[in-house]
Image (cartoon, rainbow, N blue to C red; front, side, top):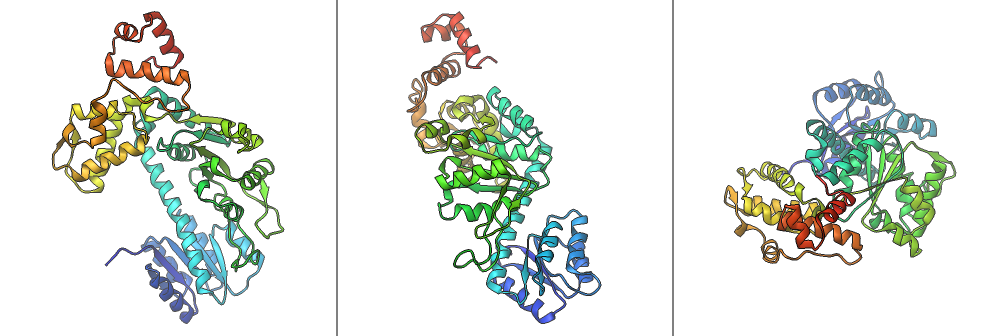
Length: 452
């Protein structure tokens, strides 16, 4: 039997309605308990961990609002959906302020119920992942998580610094470098750490959906809008909204986002009331936004509003000294995940990995290590077990990849780094190989931040 999708508690003093909702949610694959009064529900909440509670508001003795507040006082991350036969705005506002995810009016529309439950569980997963990340960061130094090279130390130091304020941050870097992890680090180190971290992939938002997705929509605002729906800005209230691939946001989305950042307020699609939330915005991109601005594809005013503090995450090829550390961390992680015996890479295999430019960055390295953990029968993984593309590249280590669009300074920095790491660490010999004086090499090492 497969694991349940989620553990849900349904609470209502109307036994028939309670049983009907329980059955409907069980059909969705959830494990669902039921209680017919608030006191019984509170006892269950103290005995078990639930992802979600769907409860009536009006019940004798202990009502739904009291149940919600009692659960919140215990510090639980359980999401709440409240049901009421009295669909007053005041009731909804009170429920939201107390920490409810959403509310439903009776008679309950089961299609609407399933949709709201799915969204609430999505948020509950985000909260749980954030809590897990926070615990991992408390157990380990940031350097062990992100890398110990000088470029990554600078990234971590900057993330730690900006975490102490609510300034808008733009994280730049190639795909697979760990931009989301940096954003989560900022959130976890901030005063907002116990509030939601909401992720939005802007590349997946079509021009017609972006406004409703970010700001929500009011009931009846378009066909199929059978009830009010909260947007990502609502869900992130008090916490952090992370907009990934911001360079792919369309013209209308850019304008909408700029207005929120400048005014701190917005309206739901089809809504009339001005909404205000307390959200810290972090964005990320693998594109060169300044070039997009010059080409007229990205608003200049939005660009300057987003990059109040820019953080650039270096590609893995520019911090090759982190590769052995990352290999060890990934080996340990995947050995535990796939329940395999301990493995390590031979010294030669590690060096092959260090010499590879990793166009897919940390994500590509991570995938290779997972593959080796699953497929290698040996405790020590040798060069012969590495993927063919790694071995083939290593046969031509006298060459390195120059990316189209790379500046001359970037190419020179990479050449100097590769010469010192692959040819010789002796600076006199490296200078001779590069055709420059030792003094010039020393100057360029300082210029490019390559001094140890």
